Length: 454
Image (cartoon, rainbow, N blue to C red; front, side, top):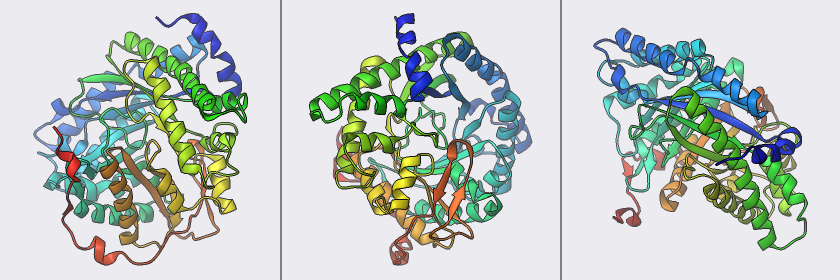
């Protein structure tokens, strides 16, 4: 049982250290929403989402008031739309109509985002998958709340390089269509290797086909709490450092467990997982970069950064799994540049480069996240960056992702402002030596040999 004393113990974490429940995300299966026409399917999607999630926002607000725990976002994830629309959508425009239905439903129930405008193409693309992927730029440009993702690789299947090449082109198109808003369309799209079915965080959330009809997943975040805890053991050994992170992660996860159970009970929806991810915000004191500095680095990106991040990620997971039987999603440390003030500072100081970020993704929770690059970066170069990141995930049997934003009209030295949790980002330097011949080969990179373990 979770006692009220445990909740009271978190009061200081909430009031002084930016502890929050980042999201309550309701996963909804739309497999029973396939109609005989695009219009009928769109109506069924809208109706099921509204009926399922009509009380989600008010429930989150009630729990927040009851326990004094900030719940920042309420979100929805749905079955990958490429699967739902596969039999009725004959053009990319048809899929855009389903995106608009998702957007209307999300607006009606009052959630912050809805994820699942997605395709799973790690081994190959169906006609529907390709149509959906090609529709992504227009879908993101014509909706406000829809988030999109594509899983284009896995440890067991290898990397679908045809999809990787196409996605580079799609990202450029999405940037162009939303150039008047800092190319923000790209901030609502992420490409994965080894995507989890139960991730509550955007932009990569979707409701996996192995999930129940509806489920509640909670994402809890507290980088400020971890940083404050480490201040008390400054200069101590790695053993003490690790124990401190682990104990702190345990307490943070218990808060998420409490909220998840309450939401599940009130909504009558099964509890899925708690995702303990140290997800930063632009707020001062809510930074993974600050944790790395407290561990002993002058800036994120200094020598030792990858080791420090590996330590942090592992101890967060160890503490989390002791606090809840159902820890899932991504659970670890996020390193988004635009959403973390100290990461931004490290980039501007020259301590943190795209290449160093790639090295850090070998041990972090996700990958290259919210990276702003020059708007004239070639599509093949973007595909090459994606391929590198997918290879890290494939070989290391971990989730990796890329959320990269070629900001049209901007170059080195510029900054792009997104606002809210997305913050702002300096334009990062990209290695522009050509990888055209590599990306244009086509086909699939085979799975590594250890993928055949059974």
